[in-house]
Length: 315
Image (cartoon, rainbow, N blue to C red; front, top):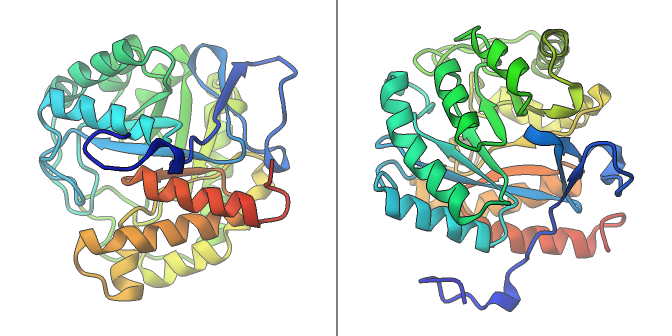
């Protein structure tokens, strides 16, 4: 029984995320674009999907800001997310929601490191990602046991982060954002949103690999809600298969975001869990392997149905 949730273990999907050392002959993911090498040569190998559970240790994140500022509560929630089927945790200590106020690296690391260290001690084999664009924070997190850096800035806001990424060779989430949180939703503009983001990814992949990060350490996040209006978001999601031409797995984070307000009229964040599950299932059925979500248990059930009902996914 999952603590405090009344959900029997036998109805939860334990999404089978395997890991192996790079260079082994173990399995090939869906369409050959699922596997993701992270720090230390471990490989996340979804079979066929991986849920990344969001753990915000912030006072102002749009969905759950302030809920997990206490270290003990944050660690408990992280362990619950793993037990509910998350194949990875993503810990964030600074909100990157639209118009969020920035914090410094000192405050960010003070929030982050106690939680990261406790989770690493409690679950030595868990995959742990840290959501940061700061070089200092990334270095501290990697020294404390993080496997992945999830960078909303693509090494743009702090170019020194590129040196850290090249030195430690973690898994890396390359995300598209048009501008920083203080300005990105003011007036986003594109010629063709899909083709513009495709060109962005091509340029950044070249930059990262030239710096020394192997391409198989990178997944691509098109940045839903980061410098995109409703028209851009709908075009992006409708054309998301276009990014398969880059040969890297896609990682999508649309959990509880404003697109559900724009499309469905859902103003309250707590109303958006069901549409999030539906959207995750729709994208998974189209071959997207990585899904960053707040609520793991319900999304795990949705993905279990996708796996059972979609040709090519059944075990």
